[in-house]
Amino acid sequence: MDFTLIKASPEDKEILQNLLQLYIYDFSEFIDADVNERGYFEYSYLHDYWTDEDRFPFLIQTEKKWAGFVLVRKINNEDTRLDGYYSIAEFFILRKYRRNGLGKAVAQQIFRMFPGNWDVFQLKNNLPAQAFWKNTIGEYTNGNFQEGENDKGVFQLFTSSAQ
Image (cartoon, rainbow, N blue to C red; front, side, top):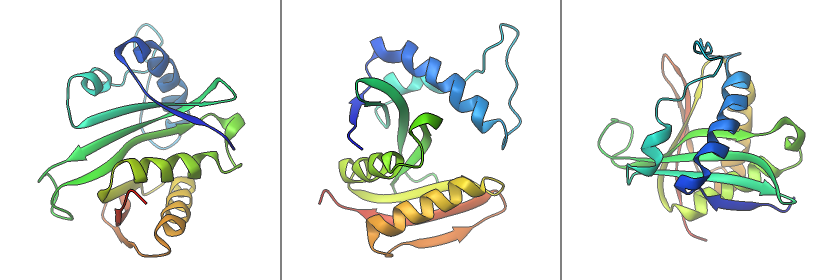
């Protein structure tokens, strides 16, 4: 499926905020999330994607329609698994565009855009995400990744290249 990955600008913040509502609604199946007094889900890190040089917001379009987003973080010396790595903070594809290869293609393009070490994490109870990421990363790395587990969930460690 053809898609366009757009680096979100501050002018795109409202679009991302709106898509985050759908994402958190979907994700509330796995986390304890409630809407605020105005009826919105809050994502406390949204503003940081335009003020923190180690956060990278992307919007996804297909056929000139919004299809989702990806929020990438670079993490330095915060975790003992890797010393300096990239992470998918949030990843969302609208239901209409799932199960046709779009998510996999977007994820693999993101990995190429940020060559280096990666640590991709999924919550323990989010089995669909675990299956998606294991398959996507396995295909991208030709099976050359490590998988681990901690008390919160499952993670995959690998190194990407610009290919």
